[in-house]
Length: 291
Image (cartoon, rainbow, N blue to C red):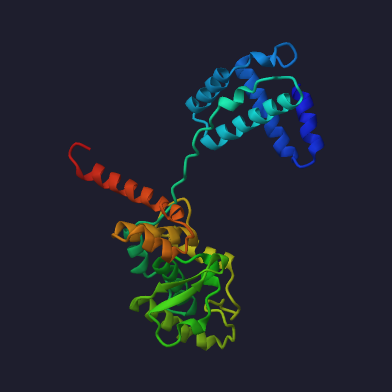
C-alpha cells in the first residue's frame, strides 16, 4: 500500500522528488517504530495511541517540532489516502494534534556592543567610512527594513527634518523620528557624497557613485557587527531587531514599536517581549543570591 501511495504522489506531478522522498522516509520510520509490515499487517489495527507514542518518542529524541510536524503530516496524508481508497473506515490521525512550533527568538546586539561599535575607530574619515557608519546608525536608530533604507532619497533630508516619511510594505506610510546625532551624521555624509559628483537620487551610493544595493548593504553591516558581537546572525534585519528590543527594554510600549517598525499587527511585534523576558531572566540570575 505504501508503494501505491508513493505512485499516487508521483502521478500528481505537484510533488517534487525531494518531497516524495521525505514522505517515504517519514512513513518508513513510522512503520519501523510500530514494527508494522506493510504487506502482512492490517492498517485497521493502528490506533491513535500508537501514533501518539511515536510522537512522544520523537520529542524525547530531541527532534525539532518543525520536523515532528512534517512527519505527522506525512502520516496524516497516508491515512487520508487509505480512507479515500476504501481501505479504512476510520482515520486514527483525526485525534492527533500536532505539537506547537517553537519560535526562534530574533537575534539582537547588546546595548554595550552597539556602544562599543559607535565609539570605535573602526570607521574611517573618508567617504566610505562615514557612509558605513551612517548605514549602521540608520538601521539601529530607525529600525527600518533594508529595502526601505536602499530606497531612501537624498532630498528626503533637506531642510534639517526631525522625522522621515517611509513607504513600507503594501505601500503603507509611516513617520520615523530622527534625532540630532543621526541628522548630523547624515549631513556629514551628504557633504562627502557631493565630492563624488554623483547624480543618483538614492541617498546611499557606492564609491563609484552608483546606487547601493541590498547585498552590499548587508555586507557592510555584517562586516562591522562581526567585529563587536558573536550573535549568529549579523544582518540589517538584526539591527532592526536590536532597535525594537532596546526600545522595549528602555520602556517603550508595544504599540509605539509596532508603528515605528511598520508592522500590520501587534502579533508580529510581540516576539520582542520574549527577548526582553530572556534579558530579565539573565539579570535575575546574575543579581539574585538564590538564582
